[in-house]
Length: 134
Length: 207
Image 1 (cartoon, rainbow over the protein chains, first blue to last red):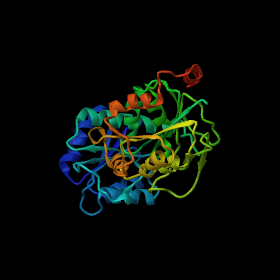
Image 2: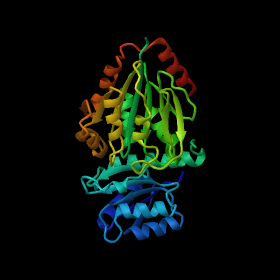
Image 3: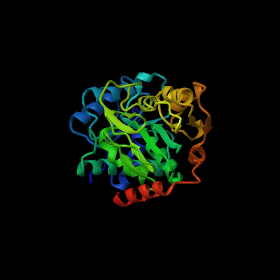
């Protein structure tokens, strides 16, 4: 089972913490310092769990998600926000089915590990048995 | 006249874990439950398995034409809206997104029609945006049902329950841990009927 995680965050410390927390559990952690890098990684074929910061210079997290959606790059990925922002923005046009969770910084390492672990298992399950639906 | 219970539960961001916790504590009810959770299609089956894991009721991914049975939970699949025809038959329909999502909680709730023989209950859980708010008003005002919103302290995101609450049509604003018993109380669950238990157990064995 592939256990790939991408952390999209402009703060190097956060990217490092996520790597340090997840890599010992066997996750391959890809880091992206902004939305453009995240899109590049997806275009190169990254598939896995994406942890997305909201407040980033240039494209913010929501704008990055919109671009992922409009470029047809959502398939096979699960996105969770990972942010210090207490409340999401109130702009309803940001509503999307793509984001499954909203993890606030500072986060507990155990919660991050168990959440990412579960999402990787979901993606693995999906590869083995295509989702039911119309 | 036998009274049926129809419950619609809506959730979005943070929903799968919240639904699992809610259903873990929900007894087998003499009710049909419809769940609308915003999610990508490729996790439909995983989310179903996640929320069913400790539930005493069976959860099915809804199919077009399913007729509601008591004691079963129907999870809306992605990419289509889930409506109820004559308060009984599930219709999955393509169509424009509503509130920027599909399936939309509002669409499912607003497809319900007033009926003297049905006890309607609407529940809005954690999530961004305001999907479910119009549906809650519909359940309260048009169907004379009961409505519940998850409170801020137990929500991952308080957006949807807040929007529902702001309509003034929410009867109970409750922390997650109190929602299952409130639902059971509103259903009058002391008595899950024999048929209900049989449906749920048969379905669970097939799972």
